[in-house]
Amino acid sequence: MRLVAVKEMAEKFTLKMIYRDSYDLELFLRKVVYREDVRCGVCYGIRLKTVAQEALNRGFRTFTSTLLYSKYQDFNGIIEIGETISKGYGLDFYKRDFRIGWEDGRKVSREMGFYRQKYCGCIYSEKERYLNEKGSRGQGVKDSSKNTRTLESLNPRTQNNDLKCSCSNP
Ligand code: SF4
Image 1: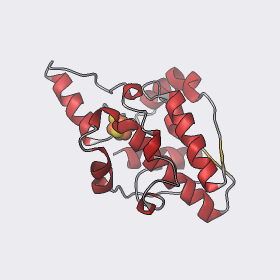
Image 2: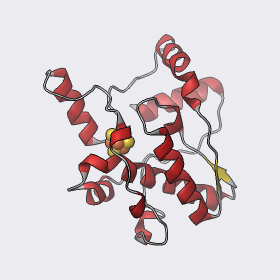
Image 3: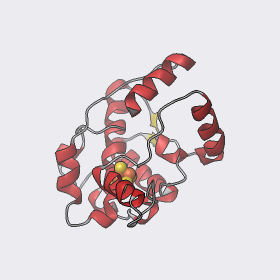
């Protein structure tokens, strides 16, 4: 659904896009199982490495992430991880606080009728969303800032090579 919404938006605003509509669920699960509480740092690393590899393959010098737009993500953690990864790939990580457009973005997306997902993206966040709907626990979209701090697993020098070019939605 998100991908469909992004494609609709790109068409509407005539944006050039590069799509990678695959998601390596097994890789993600292998890396977060037994440490689910810090899963977001792992998730950021997988996503940003995927983007960095794509940037490198295509001859770009700089990469960034829409994760920097979300008020629910760990902004400083993303920057820290992005910079660590950028060094490993010899690229620049573009840092900007896109959260200043958060409210406008919500408003415009509603007005334009785009799909708005009520959970962050992984199966854990989806579970938390449903538990929340039942009034059990959690937030609709979990504050991911509490689930980071796994930099040791993101250092390109110490990480499995399979992470460098693996598939995940950036
Ligand atoms: S809650 Fe969001 S950022 Fe955290 S692991 Fe799940 S999809 Fe990734």
